[in-house]
Length: 425
Image (cartoon, rainbow, N blue to C red; front, side, top):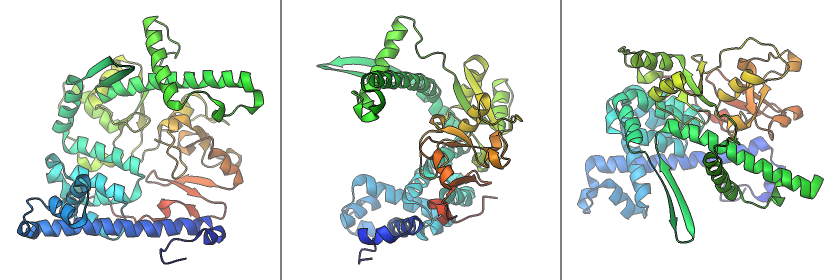
């Protein structure tokens, strides 16, 4: 290994996959520590007002002058420094290299919301645990749920503004057309389901045409349209079908994942009751989202569940789908959907293909007496699922985190390096 600390290509050839990933982790720890130290420096400079002597009103401006940062970078680091000051356990984890850079800034963005400032001290241990234990996308979803609980009035206001400020336009400017729309998340979840269905139709139609033309040699590289072009054509087809009252995509059902406490809380409110405000520390087990993790307004979920084509799926407190109690060799029907809805993405570490596009498979193989139940199901994409036949395996821990193991028994990816912190009391 040369002075850079990065293995040469010749050295990589003789390294095991586990050893190579360990090098990547060590380099990332250095990056994390450096980021946290810069944020700590800004916080301390601001605390003593050192920036004022050189004529800077804001510490972010001082940082830009000292290090030639971009404005956005300086603002993020200043915000991270303030978050570290407010949450000492989180700060210690950042400075020790236990929290990823993206995770640091995701937590800092939430901590920067003045409406949740009074809850930060109580959330310190909880945020630290989640930031070191969850995949990044799942951390973002958790933080959204936490904000919904810590700032319930603000969350309702944001959802209400999204509804009040909904808009849509189709414009033709010169040789191009532009479609633009914005509205409530619940409406977007439904529209995305419809749009994705039409995108799938466009892909299948082009693939089938390619098979007719090229036969067995057909592969994605022979498809004439780019993915972006197919998406536009799918939108055009959707408008065509709407104009002709056709339904080429078939009836669409939107699946919403919600925990029982959230459902009962907002159902009581919808019926005129006054439920006890939820404790933000329960955000770990709170769910009100679609299959991709998009957080939606619980009030819209209740309304849609009563009158719309929406199915709710209730989870246990540890995030496992309640068992359907059916013994089958294959995951089919509602049981398959339950397995795929329980996770946001493929269970293979580092794979972020949406679970809805994955296969439902057994964690403990059926051949080894593994039950065909929701609690023993795992979403795996068609690329990673066959690797189980080569000795790889996946496992879901009690916290809901998926782990991937190589045939030699070593764990693959970042979870092996995570540090366990106690939850908030």
